[in-house]
Length: 272
Image (cartoon, rainbow, N blue to C red):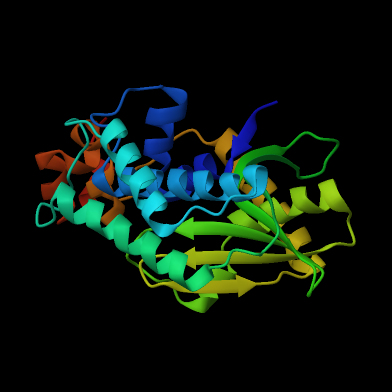
């Protein structure tokens, strides 16, 4: 039995060939990290540290302490091998973005009396069928709101884009994590899915019905079966290709392939 992660499933949906390169062929990408992913990682580490101080030490760090921690972790984890995809932005630009994200978050959410239970909580999700299909993942932060009697799953987003509410509501990751939360605390418990879009200083909350969760389970099982039955693993070109570490070996980016794509019907005459 293979235990999947949401990120692994997402890679397949974005590009089956990238999935094959990473998880089946286990090829080492040209680069492991981009400045965007470095920014996301350090912001997440900083917020994890911040809430651990509150939860375990009953100390709320001030905003200067948060900035000191962020700066320290940025320097400790930064290497010259990190890929800069958007050449118009520098490392300093990304670093300063993180400062703004954290300052805005701090001022908006203080005094942080939201009853945090866990940070970076590892969960395993049983999708049914006698435990044959399972997912595992990490919840950025889990809290309990006594006023609404809800468990809140928090997720931090550092990307610039702000999806439409319909797309956010269709997000699968936190809905899947809510299954694990109910298994831990009780099937009858209410769960609120909460996204923090840090680039926009915006919090969005969604609540799922039991019917929606059951349909999601079936959808994920169908996706896992599709992956396990996949034979071709075709590439799928998109804007995400510029952040892909396999671009140099991907047939979608060979010069002859780009020329052929001007005449898509010719593809059937080409021998691989």
